[in-house]
Length: 328
Image 1 (cartoon, helix red, strand yellow):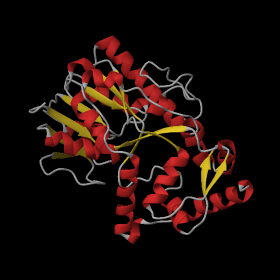
Image 2 (tube, one colour):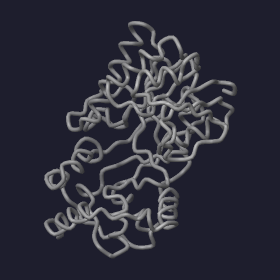
Image 3 (tube, helix red, strand yellow):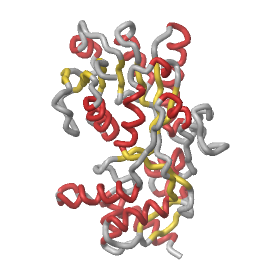
Image 4 (tube, rainbow, N blue to C red):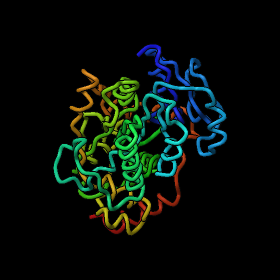
């Protein structure tokens, strides 16, 4: 892996930041195409190329004369964006990695655990349907012209800055105030949370790997929790108990369509993954960070700076309304 020349488009997000640091640690010659608005620090060894991937002329100028062993676009969400990548990178990279989403899988899944061969279909969430359309485009490009595409499907991946619970800090503030929080359904559906450092351990070895071309992989933890357990783990890290009120997902969607889209299109259904395919090319991959540890990291980060602890008054009011209607 040492000596690979790799381009990250993006690179400072929740998932990509951990991959940037691990890539450099493992000897990859990392370039990052970025507009100059870094959300998280990059390793000093990375070469930053200033440019906007959504501006074809600017991106072409930033990449002029450069070729790469692998290119990862962390910020492509629609087929037109992926097609622009294909046009820009055709013949200039040995591998193009598209970051899709595990929410693209059949929702709800007909069988568990979810495999890479599980059908892709999500009639509930536009975000997921767009990711599926991007995958379809890349599959055709690989079949028709040999475009060296690899598809990666993260599931719910978090770092210390991202609270993987609906409501974010608003929910944690309610817990600390002794107020109830909303959990969809009866709280017993199964969910997989993946720390971004664990994701990176599965992802970085895929870069430049010849057996990944034309293939799709999901990368998740094997740490499966119920939503009740997720709420309780966050509450414990916050030093309080969790007063949980269960609300049907349909009722949440009626009260707040944006919140409901992510539930009906993703979180309301149990999602457990089989990572055997990933381990076939990354032997020994194992996620090692349990969510209880991740929850403590999250609370420590938010408690370091009061400005990070922002309550969303609108979501707070929606939760009050739902609690009033559904509290036994």
